[in-house]
Amino acid sequence: MAQRAPGHLLLLNALRSAGLAEKDVQIVNVPTDQTPQTLKSGGVDAIVAWQPNSGQALRELPGSTAIFTSADVPGIIYDVLAVSPKSLAERRADWGKVVRVWDRIARFIKDETNLDEAARLMSARVGLTPEQYRPLMKGTFFLDLAGGMKHLEKGEGLGSIYGSSRVVDAFNVKNSVYKAPLAVDGYIDPSLTAEAIEAGQAP
Image (cartoon, rainbow, N blue to C red; front, side):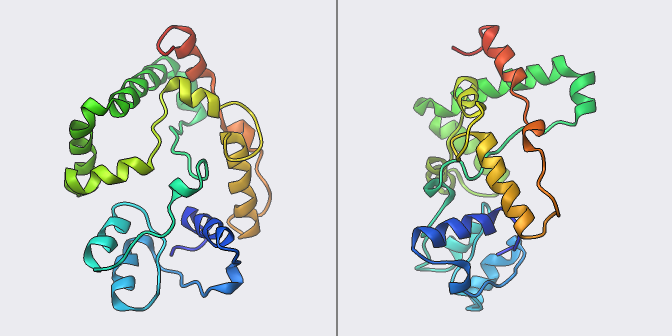
């Protein structure tokens, strides 16, 4: 796996769930895009990877199986829209439109009648067929604006993006990604989501 990356933190949670610690396994530092080949070569017993590399490994090594995923630790990985302060200040109205479009996308994906079309569109982005991609969608929780706002409330633990960000921050400091803790709250701005909801974009 790629050490000191999100997959490393996921591995620690997987080990903890099995009553193990990092010292109980031997970690081999491998770039994520090389993990399928490393597993096939027999150089390691397991890999930590994400799509499309994890899917590639499962397809190319008969008998391989996913034993732990981010779906087993809800909130450990949040995908976000990250914008520079300068761009947000200068083009706030445009970013507001992007937020509102995301709400439409999330609702489209969550509607089971759109499952085939959503799988077709998203699978093309990662080089998979819709049939290969469809099972992967079950492990991703798509948040519309109302759902996202619940996770944008300040709190401890992985149910809040604030709490999850503090967990990641502590991991990064411990693993020397950077030296001192960050003021993570300052990087999170729920205002555009709140404004879209107040304007009636989401119930």
